[in-house]
Image (cartoon, rainbow, N blue to C red; front, side, top):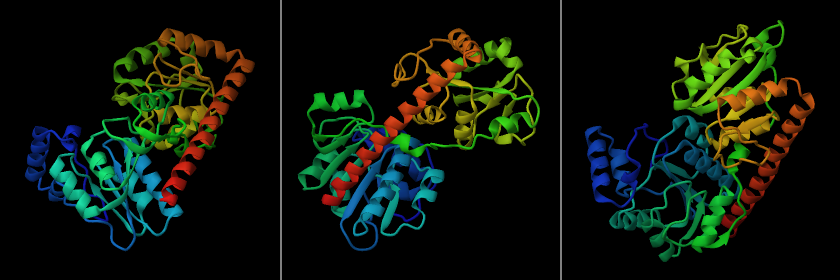
Length: 386
């Protein structure tokens, strides 16, 4: 297991399962690219972290959210227990997430993880000999947790869906995930549902963005829309045709090439004042907190949980599309551009309603944040007591 993460390379997520054909195809890809570290890791040829102490293995998946959460849990465990060695594996390398969070930590090893084929599982458990295995927001492949539990390893599922294996404890991120674990009967202990991503957003952001946008001129209203690529053109077109465009700017984000429809990407903004009607692609997440704090209102047409908490932390009115996990909890449901723009028009002349909805959003954010901290503290105490 390397002390520095290898270079990033995409691969089929199923290559980390137990099916032979996806694993063979991934092996061929890595061999062709001469990525021997990843190839060896997928077959379980990992080395435990250097030093002394029991090994706790944190196994992340392929998403940015999974790796972020795994890194944060690793950092929290290092503060709680200095005696253990910590191994972090992932299925996709995100250097911008990993390096700043793990730099300088001792008795830590990290790198790509193994697949779930029985021989690989036996090999990696023999080499790492983990005292604890923490599955973090990853696919519920059954062979590893089964074999780990059979060998006496503590197994925890953190923001991981139930699978065909039992765990010592499960930490679900939502009420629906908690219900799935309850129905499965696979967890000896089921923690309260809480989304830890609420802990990783800025609770209080700099509110100077609005003044930067206008630079001494008449203040501009700020609107924020997040959604899929399939819906971006229609929403931007309708917003530009509305009276809202004559007195404000629109930030757009989500999945899609928003720079195509936008006038400017915020990563290219030179801090010059903008004109009313400008559409800005929010392509740099470092600006998300500032936009959330400056906006008059926002709408989430996609269910990105981290953006949801950041938007709620901004204490401004926020609405969501049907099917959003937090629909109805301080978040009214609006179905399309017409409803969203109508609601934004109404808020312009309703300061009391704007304040009420902003306060409701603020309370919902802090409710989740406190609950998530309690769950994290419980998790850390459980590992401390091992």
